[in-house]
Structures are given as structure tokens and as C-alpha cells.
Length: 640
Image (tube, rainbow, N blue to C red):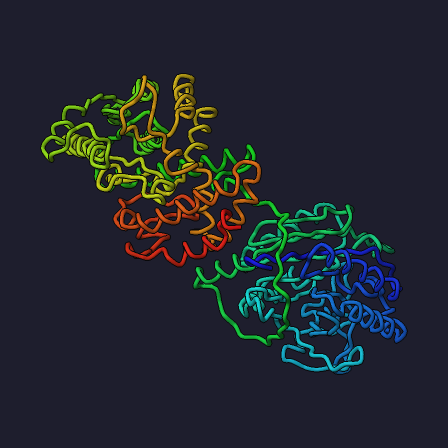
């Protein structure tokens, strides 16, 4: 449960309709299995202690007594086990019969939650037996299993020593209707919704059921643990398939496919959900009855998928759709700026690297949108001390292949003169030596754009902004930055997509060679014609930095938690010390370089993470990193 992870399970045991003692034994076996796997929450189907399809047997006192005995057996079995179990049972309260969920923890019944929405249509005729749970919106009490137990259709169960772990309970139909209980439960703080279900199987229903669970979890920023009746319930005209699912914020984490076992287990991240709700200040708040419990905070082993490249779409279909959407957002944003300023010319510094290549591709698409002749796009390459033949050649080849205007302006003499003017020897490779080149290039672009009545399009990407890997008032500045919210791993993906799926053969060939070129600002003189200054050797691998950026900025995770996730995701790719080293670098640079992000040019937001001071990130330029570094140092692998 540390770091906000809670392992949960949805189980559909093989039941016998009407045989409560048998069913209790199967449920206890399921609890034991979940407990052995380290689960802190396990959910069973609707009316699981007796069977959903009992029909008029629900009117029989024999069944009711047997069901209560079964719940008592399950409760006693849970004694000494710190696992929250939710089972379905018919319960009488206030002289009425309710289709209920019984919440059990460590040998005690914490509460009973009746089903609010009781269907009586098609194959469902629950209204024949059960009262609507909304009659018990306010807390009532009933004598059940030898104890006085609280009954309430709207209550949440909160772990008092891990308050982000807060459970709400609904039953089947409650999820299928508009404005179901989950809305109010989540507004009251529930981060996990348990749905005890008896959804019979028909053609196509599994897809719709999956969509409902994903949508419900995404809409409420919560996790859903959905437990469905299994084949043991199949009788007369109905067939059940044990379609269990665990979802988190719109994504399915685990699923037992219909007719394939009825057991789904995964880890949900309740701190991630709580963080998202804090960010979204439109999330409603509604106080409800809160029932507390304590649970030991133990380590939760991870089995869920943690994406190494969270910004990069997975699968060919997703890749095509996502890349096209990103290009469209970038290009339409630039097109709007061009229309607004009545711009008839675009200027870009084309280095032969990835970022400027992507910017040029976006500029070409924007030109198509506004009907601008591509010859009105000028790509300028500005070789200096560190420029290699490969990058200079690729810049020219790409411009020619895309049909834009191309210029080469050697800035070596200008930079040497400037360095001499400020008392620099022109040889020492210090910060002034490097940045003088970047600022000279920016001056050239700006002045050329002024001469032609054009706009300078910026090329810097989101990863560089996070690290501050840009020269202040150099490549840091432009008139519109099309890549400002595109991380480096996605830049690579976009360029590869364009090369393989969109570009003409000549442009595609150049783009593929650019992809194979080491990332470098080329501000240090080359050696034997080869790039010396390789960015990822200096600041670290961009795949790691993008992972850190996503988890720290998007979800607000501690560095220590991000380190744990990175170790899990990159197991076999990087050792712990390497991950720790670059995470330390990321945190340090992220705080030190905020002043550059506080005055960024405009640019389109394309994803869920951006660092624009006018968009998704507002941070003081002089914030102290001490608490974040302290948290990270608590897991320093060299001290263990």
C-alpha cells in the first residue's frame, strides 16, 4: 500500500444456486487466494452467497437464514486477515428485503449497502422481491449475523491510515443508469468503486460492459472493481460468463474475459487518483456517511503495466490516429497565428536534427492550410564550430525534398568577432562559447524574418524545456514554438511516422537518417568530422527524462515513487544507479531552469502535459528543490 498502490481483485467463484453453505466455502477460498496474493480488497458478484437467479426462493425463510449463516461464516473466516471483502446477499432491514452488498473487514461487518436501482424489465424482475435501496439513504441499523450493523445506500469506507484509499459500493444496475450512485460516492471521496454485478451474457454485451466500466472510471476519476456472476449462475434462460474487470481512470488494468476463469487482479494507484481530483477543481464535493477502518501499510508488489514511453501511442492504429492528430494541432495552431498576423513568410533554423525537422514538417502542413506557397518557407542552416557535414547535408536535402526555400549562412566569423568583443579567447569551450552561437543563430533568424515580413518558428521541444536544455534568449526564443509541448520521445515517433507513412521517398530517406543521428546542439567543434557533444551523454537518456516528466508533472508523484516506477518499467534496460543518477539530474535541472519556462513564446498544447506559464504549469522561478531532493535521497541505491 506504500506509494498509493493497493492490490485488488474481482472474483467470480463457481457457485451453486441456492446452496449458501457451498457458496460460502467457495467465497472463502477466493478470499484466501486474494489474500495470499497480497490483495487489500476483493469483490464478489451480486447476491453471491445464494445466487442471483434464485427467483421466488428469495421469499423462502430457509434461503434467507442460510444466506445470513453464510455471511457469518465468511465474516469469521476474515478474522485476522487485513483484507476488505465485499459479498452480495439478500438482507432484511426495516421489514423490507434488499439486494445488498455486505462489507467485511478483519472479522467484522462494517456496513451493508442496499442496491438503489432495482430493475424490472426484460429478463430482470428484481422488483418482485427487493425494495429500492434509496429508502435507506440515511443510516439505519439492523440486527444481522448476531450484531447491530449499519445499513445505508450512500456510505463510503475509508482506510484511516491511508486516506486516499476510500471505497464506495454499488450494485449492477446502479452503473447502467444515468446519475448512478458512483457520482455521489466519488464526490464524497471514494477513489475505488466496487460493483457487484449479475450481468447475463448476450452477443456484444461484453464490449458494451467494458465501455461502461472504462467510461465510469474515467468520468469519476476513480478505480472500478467490477465482479460479474459466473457460469454457476447460468440457469433456465440465462447464461453468465464471469466477466470481471479492474479499471483506473478510463483504462482497463486487468480483465477476465467472458467464460475464461472469473479472476482479475491488479494494483490501483489511489494517490494518483486523489492527485487528479485535486487538480480538477470542478470535481464536486458531497459529504456522506463515512465508515473507517485501519490497514497495515505494507509493500505492494507491482504486476500492472507501467509504460516506459508514456507519451508514445501503442499499436499501429493508435500510432496513425495519434500522430495525425498531433500534426493537425500543431499545424492549425501555426496557421491561426499566420492568419492573425497576416504573415506571408515563415522562417526556421534547420539544423539537420530532429526538432527542426519536425518543425519544418509542421510548417509545410500549415502552409497548405492557409494556401501559402512552400517557397515562402525559408529554412536556414547556420554552420559554425561544431556543425558536421552530416547534419549540414541533411538540412539541405530535407529542404530540397520538401520544396521549401533554403539558405546557408555561415556564422563562424560573426561569432568569433563577438567573442573577441567580449574578451573571450574564441577557443575555450565554456558556456559563453556555446551560447554565443545559439544567440547568433536566433538573431539571424529574427532579423531575416523582419526583412521578409515573416515569423520565426521555434523548434525546441517539451523535454528540453523540462531540463532547461536551451540557450536563454537563443533557441529558447521564437515567434511561435510548434514543438513546445511535444516531448522528445514523441518527436522521434512523429518524425518516423512521417518518414514511413507520409513523406515522398527522398524526404523519407533523409528523415530516417536524421533519426539515426545522435541528438546534439553541435556547439563544440567536431572531431574527425563526427559529433562530439552528444546531449544524452550529458543530461541523460530522453526516454528516462520523459518518463520522469510524465509521472512528476502529470500525476504529481514524489521522486521516490517515480524512481520505484522507473525501476519497474525499465528493468533490464537501465540499472538502479543509472536511473537514480538521471532522476537526480532531472529534479535538479527542473527546479533550476524554471526561469526559462516562465517566459516562453506561444505554442500549441498537444497533450496532457505542457510547461507553458499560461497553460498547464505555473511555478515560481525561484522555488527550492530541497524537499524533492530529500525525498529522492531516501531511496539512494548507493546507501542500501
